[in-house]
Length: 288
Image 1 (cartoon, rainbow, N blue to C red):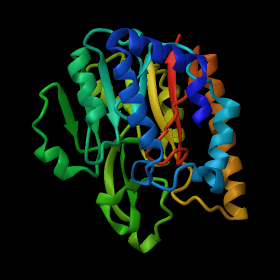
Image 2: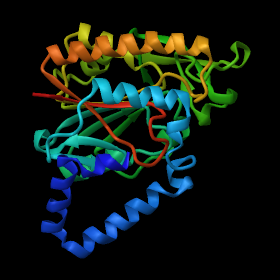
Image 3: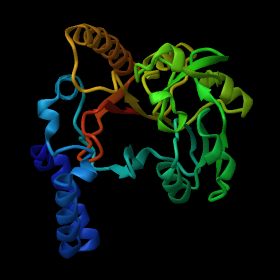
Image 4: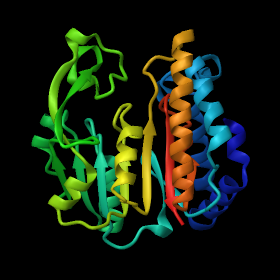
């Protein structure tokens, strides 16, 4: 992973940082970054342990083979995701799905670009009820799916606050599934807000992204930029049966990436140096 930091994109980013903030700032930030990469608490596991975990090796191999590395210096980090800043218009319309207990990514965009942001999560009732920090951000207690319906959500360890998945990404026992929660298609939500186009779409929806993506494309909705996490399984150690299922997951994701290329999107791997690298496949789609 460290070798990624010596590629052309990152070298240009270093030079930009030095030009704007000085060499000492670059050294301080660089040292802090490297310490984070070596800190198990920041990484979420032993540093570079993804080399020894089957699922993460498969995810890394997929990213290396099927996704672009960043090639535009205007691609910048916004909290835990990346966007091409040059392609963000003034007062963009942003839809975000899967917020959990924080929306720092969305808050940064709201302030920097005067964005209108619509956040959705059917499992974050308390957070949505108590959030009062930014009037530019609207929060809704519903999710995204390929139909307008109440659908079963499976909770991690039977506890909503730990995570919830329509596709049972956590492999929860049926008797501990959770509850049925309201979801809508992206088209329905846009129609409700009288939106005919959105600038940025973010989805962290615990295993449901491929099915939702297919529905979005069938409805001919093409955001300028899309940030999405594609999760296969919560566990890292895969059985032979799991590996066969991974091949099917890989096939569907490659088909989706090829569709996006035909629609004139660039498909980038979003690198994670901390917070569970290669736990999932994280992609930035940028429309040319």
